[in-house]
Image 1 (cartoon, rainbow, N blue to C red):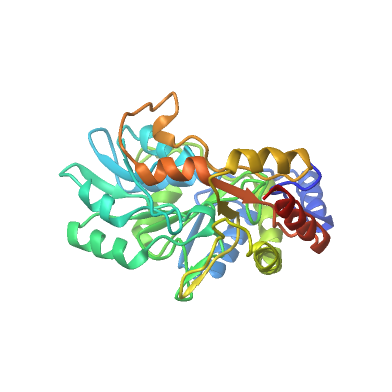
Image 2: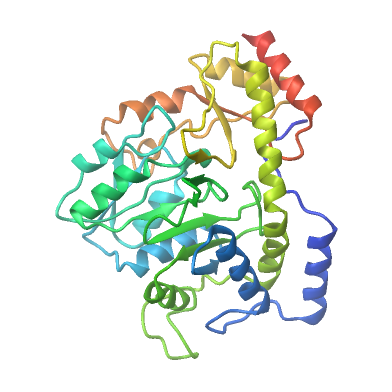
Length: 360
């Protein structure tokens, strides 16, 4: 595609730091606190989201998995999640032996529907994972009410929402833990990687063990753990990227505003920020009943528009559940994301808008 939906934006600083690590040979560390670059990255990530602790792992999926293990989620437990998300949210639950229970979403911003969520709580419900999809913030106040009323912890899936805030507080910091992804298509990248944030020292100590075979001092496994460590190369890339993140986010916001202005007259539903919400614009997502036709024509013109997600998780061949999630089904056939990442130029935005007008 001439204009990709999302791309990693790396430069000389990332190349230089990777080269220096390759030269000194310290590629990873099995120490409890991780290597030099892992620790440096964790400090910068915690500082950015204003959390006491950040624990680096090797993917966003690993972050979710580790967070669930830290809450002792196991076979027989149920975890409430949206079906309208990337499959990693559900797979992380299955990996613990627990059962993912799928919840519908709100048409307003594609995040978990608190009313449907509350209806699906049972005596086996042990956790809730709301997803801040596309960077849109889930309905925090209602989720907080439900969590307190039923005494159920919340893990925020913030894989897509690094930099999004609600009432000036970062996603991932409202509840017990928040999990982020640093996959190449995200708002910043480590190549591959993820991290968990928490203000709870006990959870932090457990997460440090979980990512390193359950060990503290080596060969002293104290709880179940895996190798979820983030290599030094990836941590170093992430540290450089964190410094660039504010600039990346500003560029995304500017592009989203430009695009909205140019296509506001079309018969489509545009993405909007709620009051007190500051979205990171990871994905600029419109909805239209002509989605498939528009998607094909945009792609034919070299515009990397994409649909996230055309098949809800509960309908994938692995899960294959016959349940009714009407808004989820509607979204799966209507949503379409347009490119607005920092390398999308003003000329590109104008071309996308012009093409949209020609199609509609």
